Image (cartoon, one colour):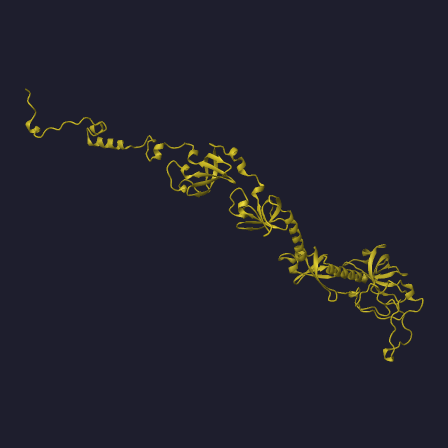
Length: 478
């Protein structure tokens, strides 16, 4: 796209503005068959070397006489020329700028780049270098008339066009929010659609007002005064660059810094700085974690270990508990066999209950170690969440197992064996079957109590009398 240097300059200068002396007498008209002569090589109204092809030509001016303005101006000063100058004097309504000619150029206050409410003598000082555009010449003295605002606009368009052509980013402050996006000041007006502000939807565009944003130029048209910008394109490019660098660095076993990006039922996604990894709920803590939200929150910074890498599928598995001490390494010292410890019943199964002694260490109380009497359901002895005292029976750190006993941890000790068989031999106040029978015998009369025959050891059987002996009576003594 070929653009001119004096695009926003407005209408071209008149014959008097170009510095040509007024014509004396009537001028020949085109109707008389005479056409104006082409501008000579020293015509100040001719386009300068900085003017691009396609610029609207300035009005032709009659070549001055020998010794006129053309002889007093250097060849590089032409209408539309962009040039640097040095401020030689500052007044309240104009400044004089040395641009290399025999006469200093005049910069009017209206053509200076001033902030709202700023005076010319506050913006410029003697010796300061400024960029200006030649917009005309004084008719009498031939001094160039200059514009700082037009020069900045021209320079800004050149920068934006070069950035669009070369694919380099541009930066500018956000001036305001308009329908559909943001207005960015690049020296020329740039528009950034709302969809191009960030990688995702933006809830409040007003938060960007006053910020300086760096963006990629998607479209540039000086004729239509149109510049479309995208910050999202730069963010995506930067993310991809960091992602490629990170994949080249990642190794299993590394400990990396990350930020919690999202929480799900089965874990959390951690942003490692361009690559997202999955932290499964089972790898969050040595203890039992019911919900990831109980341990983490979005935006939290943490250190995680790289457990597994799948470069083909670009998947990363992370662990949080692996960067903390394993509680089983000192379990033997903390839980000596025979000691009484306290824990919380974490869960109950058909064969017993698991008691959490500390986060990451659960011991098993088998159903046979819950009570002296035989029970069929562990819930008859304990309930989930209950704090109980247990005795350590066995510790196996390699197997990550601890065997516990609930019945042996009771202060009164195990009950007598008679209770286990269903009897009452261990109780002094128990009522026995003999007591009941003895009391019944006392009620029946003599011979039936505890001292009666019913409680004596059986002796030899007495002979029964022969039939008819009772009728014969006792035998006679001879």
